[in-house]
Length: 622
Image (cartoon, helix red, strand yellow):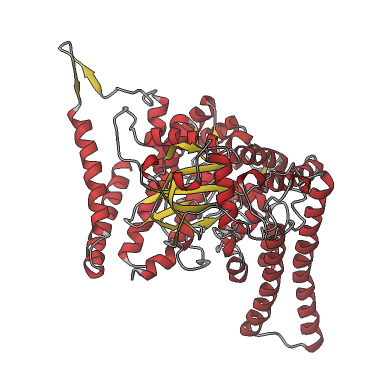
């Protein structure tokens, strides 16, 4: 009970954003609804108005009051010219939104303390203790009431508070099911805007002089594939003029920028007030400052298109500069159809990771079957490879990984979408991170003083600061907690649980702003491995890449070309490696098309072989 109250208090206070920093890790959050891949394509026609939701623009006189309901337009036509983008919220408006959130959140937390006191008083008065079943019913009802109230408040406010809902919904390992289920709709189904308004925004952003909506899109689905806090996405088909291919169209919510930036400004101001006190266990001002910077970049889809291409270039070439199969599938932007608020890109057929459990059951795949286990390993491998290469090799990486942005494609591959939040870290930080990975991977054991000193010194070199009373093993414990999920016992007597009072996170005095989002990526992968019950060490998996970085062997295009005096030739082993990788990917996708009984047998064999190979590699390293 105490743990539940503490967790909920953390969720509804600014401290919850620590979880945002390290990222939502629930791999199989309850599905909010059935699969949404609408094929209800309409014959594209001119956009006409419908009453807009409260985060849709109406006119420039709205003065950015995103908290108030938008004016309803009747018997009128919404054209691209009437789509207005309101100015940032005023300080009074921001404070009003914050007050509304806290006036709802604080009573929820207090209700748990009052319920606890009520039950203890009753037990003391009657001398009768509740049974486990009675307690479960009482607290289930309490959770349900709190979850409904919180969901209603976030539905009303939207903005940055939707991010909080997404965090809670994806953390089944931390929060009661009543909360994760009540808030699950915020993961990828956030109050969609009317399709007519979406078309008006697209028209304003993309059409050139004399061009109509029908000149670009032959089909445009009325029902969105997904609606998130910043944008919503529709499936469409381009006309012959633009390539006649199936695409996804990402459209920014017209007034969302002022809401999100206002909400994060509130939290940043609050954190600054407590920056020099002991009220908060971490310097959250640094955290919010980094999030504010990243959120500002998320509203520019032109920058997102550039980021997509840049990360694609990183993951489709190996360390020798040779072409290789990407660990993940990424959409590519469509040239000429990108603006600051609209992004047209490749369409990926699949479901978000937040609905993977439902989709696997629909296909007849049981959670503990060989197919599910093989998928879990493929998921971890794909995410580990792409984030390891991006973070260590170039320092430029996807900075908003969560189950709504990770896709399970119909052919079994893993997709990654939404490159609105990216991060670039410096060369010095990449080099030190690489040293940390090698030190963790090469340590003799988890208690060797010399190894702990080396790892700890590298963590301090990154900029990690711990409380004055933290044990000497503290910096090493933080590094192991972040990058080695296979550790059973952390040094210094720390607990592995991130919300434990004895977690190394609680000992942090300051965390380097440059690495806030690196930590978010690493905790996502570590959390997935915990949920899948697969021991996984990022430091072990990233060590080969780290070694290449330190040896200066990365990003040397053409390094696979050997000059021998007679000219140049391609290394045969590199070609064979490429063919082997390509063949493995083709075979993996072919298995997904087999009948269910045969697919299960093939998956069982593949899983046994993979486990044997991993065991052999572990023995060779010892």
